[in-house]
Image 1 (tube, helix red, strand yellow):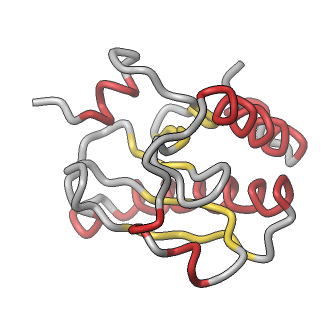
Image 2 (tube, rainbow, N blue to C red):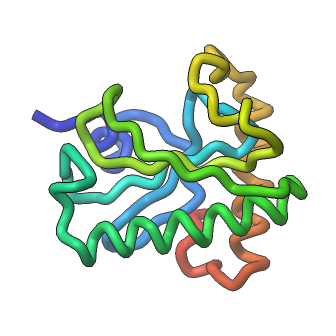
Length: 141
């Protein structure tokens, strides 16, 4: 059975993509901790990060690093948070988000809903920062 993330990757469910390559995608979280909160997900379904092939985990981490750097630039954040949780969807995913303080890592404070226009603006802002950083070939239009 496909996960919700596989359905998003295949276009069966909507997603605001900021990254796409042959092994991984990045799309905005529907329950963001901070503006631009992105989930980096391998195309291949792997339930738990410790079960991922090392080269796949390295690739997903490298994509997360590029996105985190772009988030810091776009939002002038002092840090980019990186968290692997994995309880809510059984498909490996890394949470990457601009962070200003430890409270930004509190998932109980994640937005329950976000204005679609605001999310679209965050998507475009992050896409622009990724393009400016030289990752344009991986940024969807």
